[in-house]
Length: 139
Image (cartoon, rainbow, N blue to C red):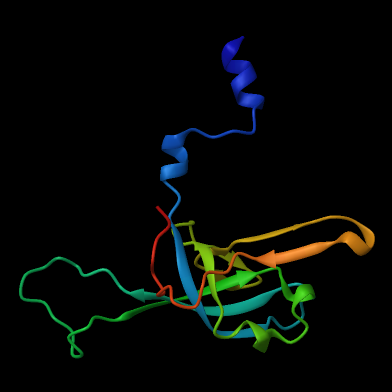
């Protein structure tokens, strides 16, 4: 009986929550996905790619490669001009399993809040302050 109640509960364990990798990403480009009403294709910088850990391996710049990912998001109705998103630093789920949406691979999910009805409707991206670097993880 106790297990049945837990299955219907909308909570997750702390251990499950710890599995979510929330990172700040900087939106480098944003464009509408053709033949869709809601989808935007974002290019997002998540900072430097993690080093492989192999000894003696280096990159040409010495600084590592940038972790640039494509994110497909259904937020187009809130941004008629997607260019206003360029340069914004927002929170993303960075370890979400990649998914194909309208033939495009999405490698994460932007975090936002929305709600309300009628003139009280709202939508807001979860943005960081400008001094936070791409790739910083929530702790």
